[in-house]
Length: 498
Image 1 (cartoon, rainbow, N blue to C red):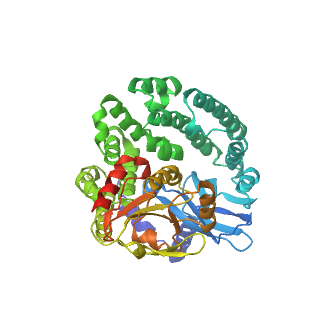
Image 2 (spheres, one colour):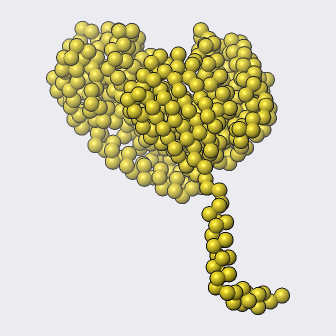
Image 3 (spheres, helix red, strand yellow):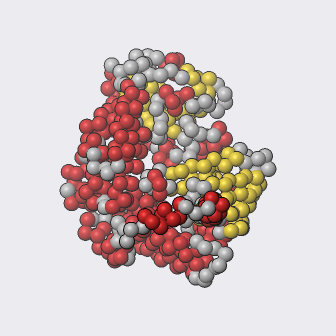
């Protein structure tokens, strides 16, 4: 049927009636529900920070990067954030320094968080969340209380097989009980309750599996077959069958922990079948495992974030050269041209950065003070071999090197041609001094007050060890750690002979 006569008839309506119709259509359009904001506010007593970070994974970024909102706090610890960036139910984190609070955030939630942060353990045990969306968040509150109130004497990651299985069963019973208590009933005041119930179920499922995956990955007593049998016997078969389901992206434990460790598990399994595989550097094979085994969105997410982190935290020019030769073929496998461009550009930028500090060039000079305020200069040690250690009190692997460092300095205590200098970077003065008292480390201990040392030596990741020869030139920006024993001593002896 020809609709043209009807259209002409409509256009011939009196102008007043036409105006009324336009007004009605406009009014209906204006009544379309606006996107709801997410609000979090409250008061954190004894908060010394003026700004907090509020961050979460953004589906519009493909879950690859976090969106970070800055939250201002006044002198009394009052803070307020209103954002439209939360477009779906998600796990978010409010953080600054030692403070780290997980929050269930969703459009329309208006939450109030209160507590006293003077003592972090007491804060985690007694903090309160109220307002719209508080019902879902009671699970996270109860989870924090359980974590801090019932800590095991031995951390789960140090437990052996039987002890860990016992821990996992206990942990699962506790989480199941909390889940039923919070999500086992409807709540008309929380329209996202069922969504967070699903998110929590996935989070718990992958957390339990992560505990066990971590064990067989890093426990060298497990063989290939023992690892396979252990996981098959103690994890849900449905988890493995649906490992690449898109709904898993709701779970932060899936993205960060489980799928972050899984490629290392695959690599260790390959080594268990063929020990020669261990000769390859760890990082590129991890990307390879993701490219071969991962599917769907998680493949894109983890390959991109892994390669981005490798480049961003590259420790030396030599390491970057390996990335430049081996990484492009994996970059090309990404579906997103934008992601490909970002990684390629990052490689170029990192090369320019590291070129400034290539091996053989003079070591960047610096001055730093010890715990008594005495100033020391690197230039004072020209003519000596310098083994430089960059570390921080909060860095577990850094402090684990302290006993080996003592053995190293003891070995060379009678040799005046070598000096051992440790510089704390990205650290707080009181935390640094506390670590010095507790660990009683050897060598000259200095503090990087203004970040000069960290910047000059590209210490984007620590521990970092640098070797400087008698001419004051860089021998290595990625020297072996003290725990490497003879590997490091051989290099030091060679430099001492020159």
